[in-house]
Image 1 (cartoon, rainbow, N blue to C red):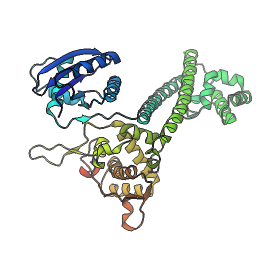
Image 2 (tube, helix red, strand yellow):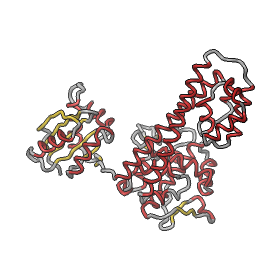
Image 3 (cartoon, rainbow, N blue to C red):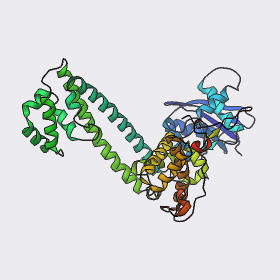
Length: 426
C-alpha cells in the first residue's frame, strides 16, 4: 500500500504535481518544466518527504508530452498510473468549488489515485512497440495527406482539363503524376505529341509509358478551348503532382521500415497467418496492444479494449440496451474491423460465419462486428501459444475457428449479438 500519492496534471511544456498522504493532506505542490533536470529534482524532493520511499504516481495523459516523464519514472522503478481525462473531469465536479486550474486538476488526480483501487498501471512499452506505433501513425498521416492532395488535384483538373482528369487514377499510379509535373495543359500535350511524350515518360522510368502517352494525347485532342485561369491552375497541379510523388516515395520507405520492425516482433508472424491481417493491419494491432497480451488477462478484456464488447446502459424498467464503450482504442478497432472485412471476402470459414449472421437478421456492419469479436478469441489463443491459424472446416464446426494447439472456447458476445438488428447504433 503506497504511503504517498503524486498526481500530475500533464501539459506540453509544463506539468503540475500535487502530493497527498494517506489522510489527503497536501504535502507538496509544484509546477515544473517538462525537462529531465526538473523532473529528477521533483522525484528527489518527493522521495525526501515522510513516506516518500513508497509513492504512487498518477497522470491523466498516457502519450505525447508525458514520454520523458514515463521513461524517467520507469527507469527509477516508480509506478505510474493512468486515469483518463474524462474520468478526472467528471470526478472534479464532486469536489468543492468550480475553479479550473492545473493545481486543482492535479489534486483531483492524486486524490482519485488515493481512494480508487481500479486505476490502471501504465506499462512501459518496448522499443519495437514504440517504433511500430510511430511508424503506423506517420503512415496514417501520409495516407490522409495523399487523399487530400489527390482530391485537390482532381478538383483543379476538373475545372480546366476534365478529360485528362478522368483518364487516370492519380492515387495509385505513378506515371500520370510524372506526366503532370511537366505537361498539364491540352496545348502542351498536343505540342509534344504521342511519340515524344512516350519516350520522355520511358526515360522517367514510368511503366506503360506508351499507354499513358496515348491516353493523354487523346484527352488533349478532345479539348481545344482555353479555360480562364488555366495557367495558374496548371502550376498548382504541377506542385500537387510533385507532392504526391514525394508522399508515394515516403510511404514506400515507411512500409519497408514497418516490415523490418515486424521481423523483430515474435507476435507478428503468427498474427499474419490470420486471414485479413497483412503487414499494415498487423502493425496497427501490435502498436495498440504491445508485445505482452497477458496484460489484458483475458480475451474479453482485449475485446473491450478494442471496442468490440458491448456496455449495458440500463435504467429503471429499461434493460437490454447495449452500446459501444466510450473508452477504447480506435486504431485497434479499425484494424480488427478491416481485417474482418477482408476475411469475410477471402476466408471460407469467416465468410460462413458472416453469412450466418446475415441470415439471423444482422446488418452488414453488425455481422462484421460479430466476426471481429469472434476472431479476438482466435487471435488471443494464437498469440498466447505462438501457433499459426488453422480453420476447422468439417461438418457443423465450420463456423468455429481454432489454432493448431488449443481450441478456442466459443464466445459470441459482441455488439451485433447483444443488440437487436434494428437497434444497433454505430
